[in-house]
Amino acid sequence: MSERSGTPTGHGSVTIYDVAREAGVSVSTVSRAFSRPGRVSAETARLVHEVASRLGYRSQAIYRTPRATKTGMLGLLVSDVTNPFYFGIIRGAELAAHRAGVSITLVDSQESRSLERRLVEHTLPTVDGLIVASSRVSDTDLRAVGKQVPIVILNRHVSGLPCVLPDTRSGMQQAVDHLVGLGHRRMAYLAGPPTSWADGQRWRTFRDACLGLGIANHRCGPVSPTVRGGEDAADEVLRDPVTAVVAYNDLVAIGLMRALIRRGVRVPADISVVGFDNTFASDLVTPGLTTVAAPLTALGEQAVRAVLHPTDPTSRTSDAPVSLPVRLVVRASTGPAASLRA
Image 1 (cartoon, rainbow, N blue to C red):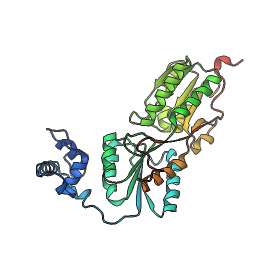
Image 2 (cartoon, one colour):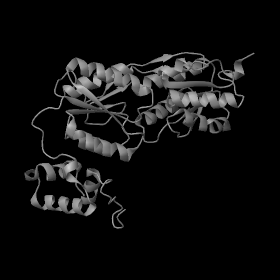
Image 3 (tube, rainbow, N blue to C red):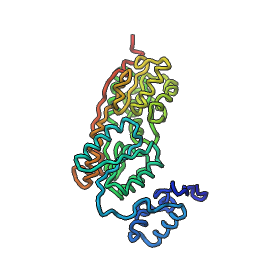
Image 4 (cartoon, rainbow, N blue to C red):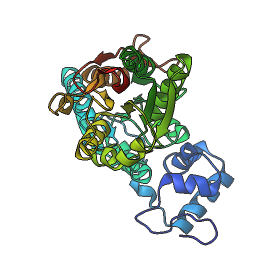
């Protein structure tokens, strides 16, 4: 790390974002300084090149020259390709791309903000558009990418960019109403990654729904959005007396159920558990997981249409996000609150 700025100096780790931050300019300005120098002032271009040289930034890695021809490729970036939440999205995107005569290149950022930035930087020269699902980078970073190629954001709202997302607020309200109908009066939300926009939406909706109904509630976590993350949270969940837990996603919910059962806690007799996404695993575990079903295939299809037709009024979504309906799927992991049982 540079002692003066704290910016990476290794040739393999420096990105266009590092140069922009160090030079005090936007990412798009750095891009133009290398690919279209006539679009920036001589003073700005000189500053950008000086900073890039000092940091060891390899300008040829990105934005070499504007492409004169299309590549016929769309990029689909997901935060974790092993998470079954993305399986339906990938399938939907592939179906829509096939119908449009283009191909999909899949990019996995492995829940890493820094890796996501580098992968986007290296992917942009090879694609005609980019779909980013559950991004972990900032809104500013995403808007900068949107100045280079058409971009669509999935499962997150970024003002000024086309966004497609499931109706999280409705889904959480359905989950809370279901649990309240079963007599639950003390609930917890088990949070996912702190960089997840969806997690923030789910927690706020859960809290507001519970407060509106006079239900005691609190937040556990955050945890990794994996089965292991749910398992690791069991002791924290049991620390306070609750009869129901709504988890960030299905994987976290499944991990929590496994850990509770190992501790002799019965699901749902002692604690009811609700997940999110209705991934295939939710119907394979015992007990079957009650979960909020998102239209994952439709999300992928809608995103491809939007990125291919960014000026089409029927697909343009930058003024307001496209929100797709969700539904609660009730299975055996939820039941009457323990205090109501005979």
